[in-house]
Length: 478
Image (tube, one colour):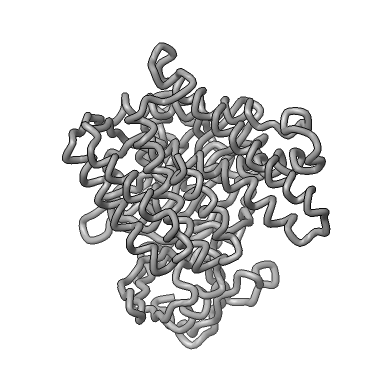
C-alpha cells in the first residue's frame, strides 16, 4: 500500500455518511500517508491516509479527511460493507477496507492506548497515543463495535468500557473537543464523558488531532430522542394539558439547565474570560445583520420579520457590553445525553464549518443557552411534522399545535430559570424575567440561530423551514 488510486478514494468518499462534500463537484488531489500500524501477525496492515479534497464549484476551497484503511491479501466477507477496493502491491492484489469497521484493525488502536498507560504516551507507527493521568486501565481484549447514525465523525465502542471517536474532517491545530474535555476531566466535571486519551501526529510542524478515547456511558439516552418522546406523549391526547398528559419535560429541562451552568462555570475557571465593551456588541450586531441580509434571498419567507429583526440587532449594538468565555459553540439537545446519574454534555468541537482558531475564541455563554432554546422549539416541530400526514379533525390539529407550543414554553422556562439560578441564585437573571439587556442579547442569539436554521432547511429539507420561521415570528413579536 505504498500509494493509492485517487479515483478509488473518490468512489468511497461519496458512499460515507461523514463526507461533507456529497453533492458538490470534487476530486482528490493528494493522499498523504500519515502512519502505518500492523497487527501481531502483520495483518491487518493499516495505513492512515490524509486525503485532500478540492472542490470545483463556485464556493471552491479544499478539505482534509482522515481515512484509515486496513489491507488483506484475501477478500474478507466480514467487512464487505466497508470495502473500498483493491490495489496492486508488487504484483499482487491487496483488498482495502475502512479500518473503523475492522475489529482486528481497531484492536491495534486499543492496544496502543493500553501501551500508553505506563508513561502517558507512546509512539506507534507514526501516531502518538496519549493518556490522561489517573484514567482507568483498559483491557486489550475489549471488542470494538462501530456506532451507527448520521455523524460527521466515526465513533466506535469498546464493549461497555470506552468509546473512541475518530475525526474524519481534520485541521491542523488543537481540536477544541480534546482541549475542553482535557480541562473539564481534570476539573472533575460530572457533566461530561471523562476523557481517557487521544491520538495525534505532527503535520508540517503543527499538531494534528486524529481521535479521542472517552468513558462509555452505558445508561445514556440521546437528549433529542428523549425530548421528542416526551412531545409525542404530550400530543397523544391534545385534549389534555401538557402536565396532565405526562409529557411535561420541565423537570428534565431544569436539570439540563443546571448541568450547563456548572459546565460554563468550570470553563470560566479553566480558560480565560473577560468583559467586552460597546465595540464588541456593535461587531456582534453587525455580523448578525449581515447573516440576515444574506439569508433573505435564500429564504424570502423571512421578509415579514426582517425589519423587526434589524431593530433587534440595532438594540444589541446599543448594549454596553457582555461577558465572554470558552463555550460549547454548537449546543443543542443532540449534543446531550441523559444517564442514570444526570445529564452529560458532549461534542465540544464547536461549529464544524469554522477553523479551530475561531472555534477557540471566547464567546458569550448565552449563545449556548440560545442553541438549547432553539432545540426546545425543534423537538415539537419535528414531531408535528411526523404527524402532519395522519388524518385528524381540524380542531384536533389546532389543539396539537397548542400543545406543541405549550410543551416548548414549559421546557424553555424551566431550562432558562434553572440555568440562571445555578449561576447565581441571588441575581436578577434567576427571577421570573431576564433583565432587558440580557433578554435582548438572548433574543438576538436565538434569532441568529433561527436564521441559520432557515437557510439550512430551505436547502436540505424545505418542508421543515416552518420550524425556524415560527421562532422568528415569535421573537419578532416580542
